[in-house]
Image (cartoon, rainbow, N blue to C red):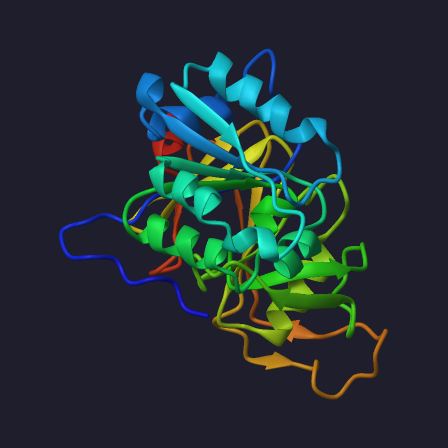
Length: 280
């Protein structure tokens, strides 16, 4: 699937994958910035807790966003693909200025929401200027190519990751979340060995990539974002090694970004951003 075309005279909404474990109490800077983008005290946010099996997940984010000043917050869950055709739920999503997908299991999102009118509507609304965020599993689901599951560890291994279709807001990157905490470098590298076109984004917990309509990524939060650029790979052994064997990847470029740094997804240029001005 392709991202929906952006109408003339309109800026695409921000895309905000979060690495999971975002601070919710003492300094919820990521969630606060999302609310501000969505209109601050006029924000109208829809929470989609489909990835989670916990009943209280949606209610918790309703309370969080309301406490951060949003004017209206509604949880809409989808237990079956039939639910994704219900006009009243589609109408509520169409009214929102922001859409937030919670954590859980990203395969619940892809198997229940993927390919339905809900998925199409979210792509259309993002192209029309609505901001879409997702944390943990919700972050993985954002892009066209989604990591469904894989092996932990620092080394790329043939067969070490399984990909599935995601929501398709963009095809420019592949997301992995809880990145440093769960040692997921190897599986993100493996995903890029399969698909060197995309940029790999490994998001630590309490860390978000705020990606604007100009395709510039801004880092927010207390952790780091590992950016893997496979576009200059000169050799990979993925096509000749047996499953379970380590994979050679020559020419892979890595950037470690923290709050204040930026990365341009179109030009693939990293920048120190505001941190450069702090250097003496």
